[in-house]
Amino acid sequence: MLLCLLLTSYTLRAQPGASVQTTVGHFLSTLSPDEQTKATYAFSDTTRRKWTNLPVGMVPRPGIAYGALTDQSRMAFHRVLSSLLSSQGYLKVVSIMALDDILNTLYQQAFDAGKIDQRTLTMMQNLKWAHGNFYISIWGKPQEKAPWGLNFGGHHMALSITVNGGDVITSPMFYGTDPSEVKSAKYAGLRVLSKEEDYGFMLVNALTDKQRAKAVLPQAVPKDIITSPQANQRITSYYGLSAGDFSDDQRVILTMLLQEYMHNFEHQTAHRLYDKLLKTGFDKVYFAWVGSLENNKPHYYIINTPDFLIEYDNVGFQNDGNHIHAILREKGNDFGDDLLKRHYAEAKH
Image 1 (cartoon, rainbow, N blue to C red):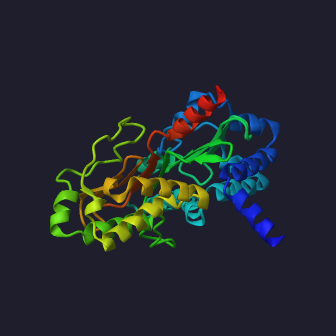
Image 2: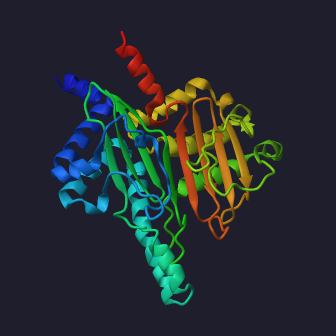
């Protein structure tokens, strides 16, 4: 009997789409009719595929604001996040939300200390940084037999989820922090994306001089990730050094870095991503670095494989390496493209 229960539990865990469908359905049930109208859209609406990392004061978002929810709905939405994300991913998302309030506090303190003028403070306030200015939108009806989606976004956050039956696609996922390290007030020292930065430095500094000559590119650090929505670019070339040329110890660090991105998602989704990467082999994983080999200075790295793209950029408006933009993309599967192709092909038979 116990074995049957364990097997049943494992089967349910192996279907992340079912868990997300349940938590999103419960979240919707906590909304009023007017709130449901704000939060829901047709799955075919092309707005589903539009994302940005800019503050809502610059680019409004579809959906309902987290700050407009009742406590009951907020609690239900946190259940949605925890059904999609691992504990590390969940804490990153809610910390990025909180960082907006910290950023507001830092600018207010700078104004009070006479370090910035009223014009600058007002300009920053008009960007509408706020923990509550992250928007939830649901595309289609959460159900087992047809695809549907969930987007959650605001300043430095664009979480794009596509679900079909038990399958969950999490591409693209953008996240960032400003500042990447808080340097004053009660949260001084807070680094929300510490491992994305630390493991990157560990890897590039673990390379030999000969390896670094290939991996470190002699060019200016990009001001943003190259595949940002504003740039509308795709990276097709493989730059840098193949992980097939890494030592065992270097490959361990690379694995730590890869998993820092992929393991932001719940267990089954994370392992689907990492297992897919392993099937192509480490010799097809390319790592390239641009910029400083020390922190607090502009730097950038890219990890490119046949199936995945990771970009990390840390420059900042003061060129001090204290403003992170990072993204994980599953190639060909942004917004579930590959998943949907298979779904519609199977539906014809």
